[in-house]
Amino acid sequence: MDIYSVVDQRRSVRGFLADPVERDVIERVLSAACRAPSGGNLQPWHLYVLTGDPLRALVEKIRGRLTTGNGPDAAEYEIYPPKLASPYRDRRFRCGEMLHESLAIPRSDRAARERAMSRNFEFFGAPVGLFSYLDRAMGSAQWSDLGMYLQTVMLLLHAEGLGSCAQEAWSLYHRSVAEVVAPPEHLMLFCGMSIGYPDPDHPTAMVRTERAPLTDVSTFLGFVEQ
Ligand SMILES: Cc1cc2nc3c(=O)[nH]c(=O)nc-3n(C[C@H](O)[C@H](O)[C@H](O)COP(=O)(O)O)c2cc1C
Image (cartoon, rainbow, N blue to C red):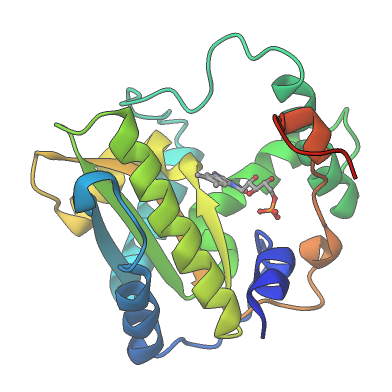
């Protein structure tokens, strides 16, 4: 599989088969991804990987919180800026719209949208959950390093025939996650990730999110016109 195909075909998977994933495969991917670059080679990522009982215990915890109306934890970081302007707002809206269309959820059906959102906290049925943490002492440059690591992980998972979905949604319940994974106090949860074999028949499997054209997001200087 050439690298352009891997980058092009990777997508956020939101419907998984229950088939287990071997620890060896996850270890191979996570250790290969450690070749991701980081400023000053800080490698500021720390990972927790869950399957089986710990994963089920976490899913149950959040289900309990959702059914008793025990709302999210105090945020440790803002997932989006409070006033998201165009074009970012439009892109965010469009990606939600595509997802809801695939699930045949009308825009007016708020309860169904919330149910779809709550699937985040079941790892979309995936047998493996990964949590990525960053030392609280780190700054925005190191958040970007962690992002590079996570994209490398997701590309390698795809090359292994696995699907993934990065999930900032988990940061809303960082205390419940901490009760299960018991991170040291100096670590802060960035996001979760669902990992497993994609269900090809899941209605969201056909979603291919759009991208802004390169001309909207880049400026070339000094090149000779072709
Ligand atoms: C850091 C990060 C956090 C994300 N958090 C969530 C999430 O909480 N729930 C979700 O369903 N998708 C989440 N996504 C997936 C994005 O919505 C998705 O990457 C984007 O719409 C582009 O679609 P694609 O990944 O299928 O190409 C996240 C992606 C990233 C990179």
